[in-house]
Picture 1 (cartoon, helix red, strand yellow):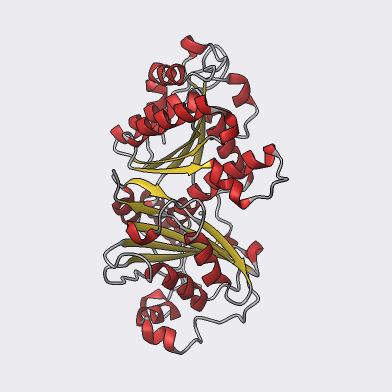
Picture 2 (cartoon, helix red, strand yellow; picture 1 turned 60 degrees about the vertical axis):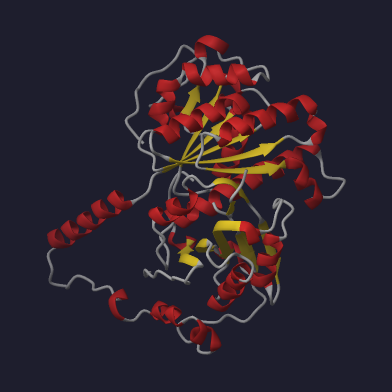
Length: 424
């Protein structure tokens, strides 16, 4: 995701009359002068659990038809160009000492307990809040794709729609109970806005304890368009890093929804740190003319999912190279409007091709050359090599402003063997 310069919890165990709860290894920092801020690699094989591809966010997925190269045995121009990568070999402080065999079980337990407490203390809390029908559908897709490390919430005025969601019942928040009586906003953004204002205390309870909140919605309707700016504003006023990721309607949805969407986006932009707007019409360039309407909407939901995941994985999944939440906040706080590109590729030059596909994505209205900050993420199978990561990185570094602030993450997903995906 690229950022451009441009003009939790103390729940309240309450329940409303509709019976919907309202509940309130190794570390390395790679500093490319004036360029990359830091790098992080993850391994999903470790079985991380949790609720779940600015700057610009780029997600790259790589697949492998190329020879696997071990970073521990590699020699050559790559290491000469980036000597800091030699730190990944496991020398020095990266060695972990196991407890002595004659140590008592008590000592080991106490040591592990202390480590656990420290880990919990340092872990950033991320919440994803889907607002309205479109936002709720996006959250549902995130859960179905087994996203980890985040807490999911859905917020709606339509109780019946919420009951069909896989989100935990205590994380389904009905807003505007008195105003809408659980029957929806009727496509009226003003009703959605007033419903959110009516339920301000419940929204504060939902946001409480978060370090970062994603507010996602499909703009153009009632609850998402009117409610998302209020919810985002509440989160930001609480000091939470707030990111909005929304879609605009397809042209076939009508002019009224398009106008309402633009008004909602204008209001949302004033209430978030970073805003990513995905024009649904641009998704049509990536599908065939025979694509069913339902599949087109599913594609829009999946783009929202990839946008959230590309950022959250960098923060939440322990990696080979550490990326602090503070680093991400430095790029995304008060960043304004941002763009996102996604690319995938297979074959010998899959990493570079995925990066090129991402920066040429139809979702990017302008080139990344104007970006002042970029967050990008590459995902590949166990055969993803450091040389491929470097190839993908150079595509970005060769285009962006030398003074741009960059954050990079790499995720190992065994199911992607032979393929690489990149999100920017």
